Length: 368
Image 1 (cartoon, one colour):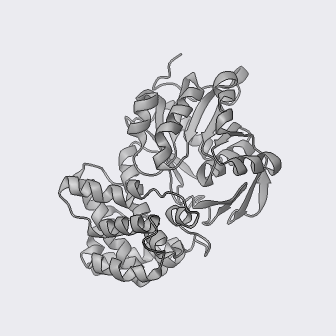
Image 2 (cartoon, rainbow, N blue to C red):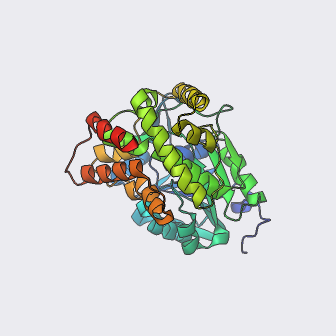
Image 3 (cartoon, helix red, strand yellow):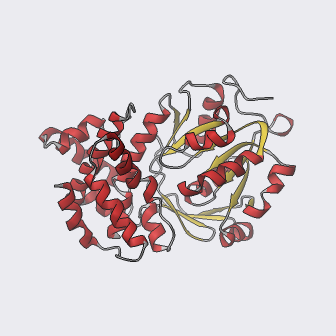
């Protein structure tokens, strides 16, 4: 039976809870999947990191940081075992939680695991829903932003959360349909995610996506290029000035592309533009927002891009600051701070430069 806009979440075996697979069980997929399993859902994690899968099978997923220390035993499969899902236990919902450069194959795998009325939920950064919809179908694709979940798979079988949960003070999950309508299946998905952390439905998925991209690109490459923690970046006067410039460049591009932007780090887009233009009241509002953000942060948090560089892995640079810079060129809007950061990350990836706080000097110059 094909899924329709009026369909709620598909029922699992004998009318029970839906079967769920997570393609990618790292920081985000592992955290959300394991906590849904703990809440009583039928969840299977699928991941390409062999040592990670084996550790989960042996000891469960170990959590630490702002959520305390505990373990959740959750079923986990290697990628080569995914046919067990597609062949014998197809799922109602498949979450894609991989790195952005792995989206295409992960979406294909997710689609192969679905029941006829199942659907895929993207839980990644940037704007990936168009790519996923082209693989599994637009009617089988939903998007979900995980905002400031801030977790790291710091070892096989271990995930640390470095910010306080959102709870009633901040909405972590914002899920939406591609067409923008609030459907029964979307409302059911949000209710389910609310068992992990705060969640809401959005009728503006694309605006949410670009707004999240703005927020991400204010810190991810900055942390990666300097090796600084996210908390030290949000706290510093020089880094705040760079973040404001990054925000303003990305906001102008997003508006030019037609996105209806949502609040960015709790402030309207105009506040960031006014701050970048030197407005004193906006500067005060931005500083207050930064100070409030610090209250949820710990000293252990690094951006995902910084984590990748430390582990010798490919970064998502092309999909983050590089993406903003590229779209800016297409729109005829310069984004010199994004351009500088993107080129710097590329040099670090190639081994031509190192992560170093001294890079702040060149970034300050770019933002001047």
